[in-house]
Amino acid sequence: MDADVAVCGDPPRARVRDVAVPPSAASRGAILMCAPDYFGVDYIINPWMENQIGRATPSRALSQWENLRSKLAAHGDIAFVAPTPGLPDMVFTANAGLAIDDKAVVSRFHARERRPEERLFCDWFEAQGFAIAPWPENVPFEGAGDALVDHARDIVWCGHGWRSGAEASKHLERIFSRRTIALKLVDPRFYHLDTCFCPLSGGWLMYYPAAFDSASQEAIRAIVPAEKQIDVGEKDALAFACNAVERARRIFLNACSDDLRARLIDAGFTPVVTPLSEFMKAGGAAKCLTLRLPAAAGKVTQPG
Image (cartoon, rainbow, N blue to C red):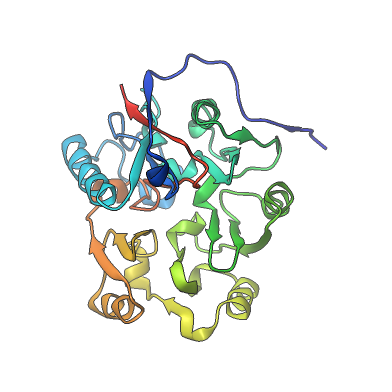
């Protein structure tokens, strides 16, 4: 068996500057984002990228990203990691890793095209004071794209089947000492857990059941009461409605049907539509563009 090693190296560090965050702000945690300076569809590593190479419009992508950033910034702090030429998917910071308390696991990407991001994200986490947890070299894991913290239940939901290995959940449970529930994804369109599954505050769960095998559907139903489940239909799922970010009871998402909007409002949430069509061409939306950081994050890194 391969030994556990930290995903890190010694490449040149990105040009960034650290800005202190007031204690009251840091206690809320921040959201990590990466500007889409080099975003584009340059290769195919998921079904959404089929026939999309070279078709993303940079100016529209920047406008959509900035719209999401500004809306999220109105309700909390935003941290930034510097974009890097040649890494068009670095904008999807959900895949940087998973951070809980003062510890972080850096992703081990399944796709070779994204593996150069690992060192850069490792550098960023280290610069913010996180301890980098060792991870087995032979187990793919794509961060908060496949591992979602359910704060209401103090558990981690972990998807596998397309990008992260089936063994990832047991390693996360060992590292973070939190109960971890493995869920198998069976539809290649929903290649990461966060494309079809969204734990919300108050114990609510928005998800697309058909993205999971029967055993995983049963596991979800056994843990989440029926009255707390917001199951979405295929149309909303394909618009990445579940790839959403919650901030101050507001749900920021790419699109939302009238039915889903009404159900979210009934549950006490305010849906906020932020169109992200350019990023959908690469298989990502609001959640993919963000990584929720724990309260332990004591600094915000601004572009510089």
